[in-house]
Image 1: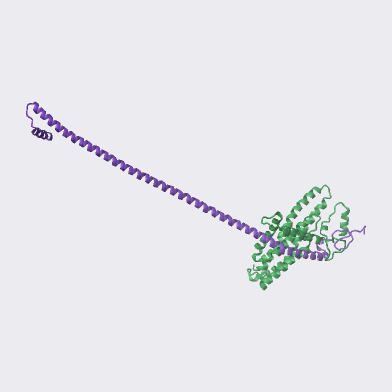
Image 2 (image 1 turned 45 degrees about the vertical axis):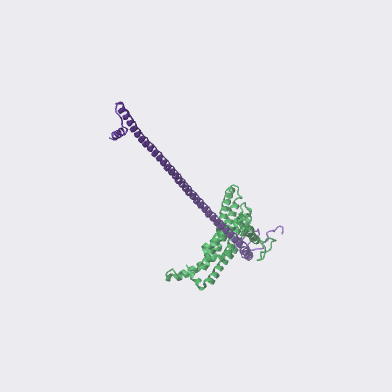
Length: 181
Length: 252
C-alpha cells in the first residue's frame, strides 16, 4: 500500500489521483451529492423559515414601527411648538393693544384735566377782568362825581370872588347843565 | 487520459484544472457510496453553518439598531424579498422562504468555493440540476394547482395570429422544458469555468518567467469570480422568480 497510495477505487479518477474527464459528469458520485444536497437544503429551509426569516421580519417591522412612532412624535412636537408660537404671538399682540389702549386712555384723561384747568383758568381770568372793568367804571363814575362837586365848589368860589352871591342851588343846577351840555 | 496526465507530471508544467472537482471520502479511501461522508458533505455542512451563523446567530440580539452581521442578514432578506415582490408579485410572498433558501445556499456555496483549497459544491451539475429541477417541478405543480388546465395557456400565445399559434406552442413547450437544463448549466458552468481557469493560470506559475503574469492573472480572475459568485446566485434566484410568475399568472 505504501507504494500505491493512489489506489484506484473510482472509474472517474486515474491511478495518480487525477480526474478522468469532467468530474461533474461522473455518475457514481452524483447519488452522494444529491443525497447530501437534499439534506442541506431541508436544513437550511427549516432554519430559515422557522427561525431566521420570522425573526428578521419582526425586527424590520419593529424598526418600521419605531420610525413611524418617532416621526409621529416629532410631528406632534412640531405642532405643539407651532401652537406655543401662536399663543406667544397672540399674547404679544394683545399686550400691544392693551398698551395702546392705556396710552389712549391716559391721553384722554390728561386732556380732560387740561381742559378743566383751562376752563377754570379762563373763568378766573374773566372774573378778574370783569372785576377790574367794574372797578375802572366805579373809579370813572366817582371821578365824574368828584369833578362835578369840584366844579360846583369852584363855581361858587369864583362867583363869590367876583362879588356875587352864590346861591348853591342855582350854581349846582347851572354846573350840572353845563357838564351835561 | 491517464497516461497523458502521467507524462505531464514528469515535465515542469502540471495541469490538473479539474482535480479540484473530484469527490472523495473524508475518512479512508473507500468507494463513494450515496451515504459516504465526502468533501461534498463537508462543504455543504460549512454552507449550512455559515448561513446559520449569519441569519440566526447574527440576528439573535434582534436589535432595532442592527450590528454589522445583522445588517448583512437584513440586507439579504430585503434583497430577496423585494425581488420576489417585484418580479413575481405580492401573492408570491408564500414562496419567499423557498426562494430565500435557494439564494442563500447558492451565494454561500459560491463564496465558500472561492476559499483556497475548498471544494465548490455549486460547480457540479448534480447539485445545480437538483436545484433547477426542484424549481421546475415547483413551477409546474403550482401552475396546474393554481390555474388548472388554464396553465396550458402559457403555451398558447393568444396574441399571435391563429395560424402561427401551433408553431409557437411547440417552441414555447420546448423552451419550457429546456429551462431546467439552462438554469442548472448556467450556474455550474460559470462557477466551474472560473475555477478551472484559475487553476490553469496557477499551473503556468511553475515557469519563473511567466509567474508574475500568472499571479496577476489569477488575481484578476479571482476578482471576476467574486463578481460571478454573486451574479450567478442573483441570476438563478431572479429566474426562479420569473418562472414562478409564469405559474401564478400564466397569461402572456
